[in-house]
Length: 416
Image (cartoon, rainbow, N blue to C red):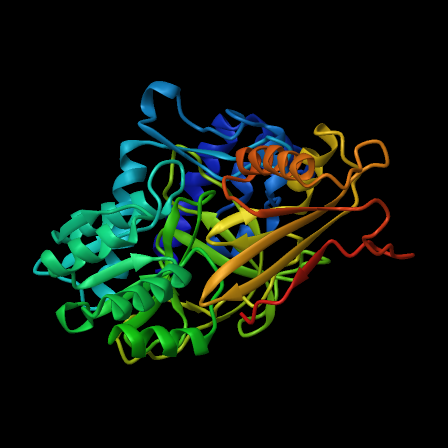
């Protein structure tokens, strides 16, 4: 494995240096040339890349092949309107399919299975990733996308789906709907592959009990390809990293120093094989632990624990990445002061997302219809920016508590 990683890293560094001007500049500023990288052990010499770097070069700066060689993009939600757009060659799609196929096989999937995919399709990577993985395995694929729960249950029962792919919160919601419809005995599911948002072991047990399945975690980032960077096996004690395609490091988030195996720190990924949008030493901001040892499934791939938090202020709400700065941008553009509060909770396994916003003295009114109209306008603007709908509550001027230190913008009551 290390020989394979070394060969792929050496080739990848040459590719990035020759074709990605912003990263070439980073290497030059650090005094590193492609010839300095002769082993996977030299990875630490390379500079990091982070979300801000990618946003600053939106949309084409980190694309590493001509546009005519790209067949698809995927994208994250944007901060202040700037998204991260990832480019894929056909070979990149093929390797992504392979990684997601490994995740499906790890939960017992075969070409005899019916894979029910209700992650969102489109720019979001969840649907396309598991859809491609299911095709690679040879399973019958139900490309359901998200929403329309009644139809989800109909297809799940009529076509006898055996593997469910969605966010854990939607899996929990589906379980409740299935029981309410009285069709739990018609469900043939045996396993679920759930990711895109944080979830607890308690939630896993509830989903397993209510759907009568085994529930498995999956991890990925749009920046590195999407789901399938790592996946759980039957042991359910961490996610195996596809380290022939993605090399993982744990660093001290403050100093950038590489930490020894077993240490808790920020996980950093290097794409060893992706050519359209190859990132070297991408800082995920996820706090994690890597461990290597014998696994009962027989795989020798290093394992990563469930992310234990983040080093930035990004929130994951119903599988969508949300930054408070996005909300602040909308408020300022709509003429509101930057005094707001984000309140998160989880009710019946579904994220509840409320944005409380102060009105200015000029716009303040006690007329209900006026306030409702302003809330609807703000809701529309926030949904356009975030790709997700919060509830909006306008409050009187100077009613949101101030702080003498760092302003408290988020109250997260979810137990994850």
